Image (cartoon, rainbow, N blue to C red; front, side, top):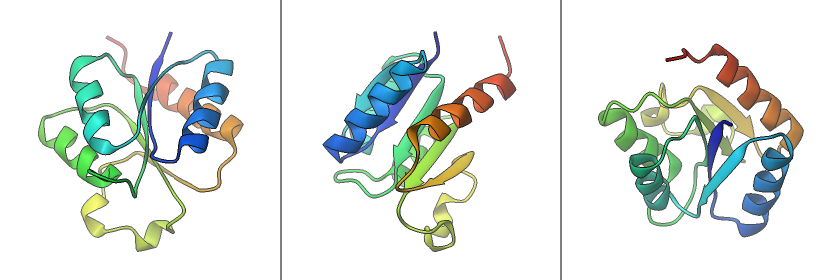
Length: 122
């Protein structure tokens, strides 16, 4: 079973995404900020990261920057209400897919499925 880490500081969005992804057969781990997300990735097997951009303590771009600097290749989806062209340029190349908020949880699950199909096995 694929393990998805959802990093989101808005409790209701975190809960809705978790339920929807579990309904699609994924095991979901959650974190309320990038710092917690970083800890989880360092200690757990994760197949895809779904992260918000703006969060307290550590935002999604800072979390992905730290993970990429450590050589972490886990595919990532950035979710935010900020238009993609307004995200900091420091975030370029850190995530594989941008999903604007509000998003449809079923479409998010489908995007995760496509990422997992493309991921190298091994």
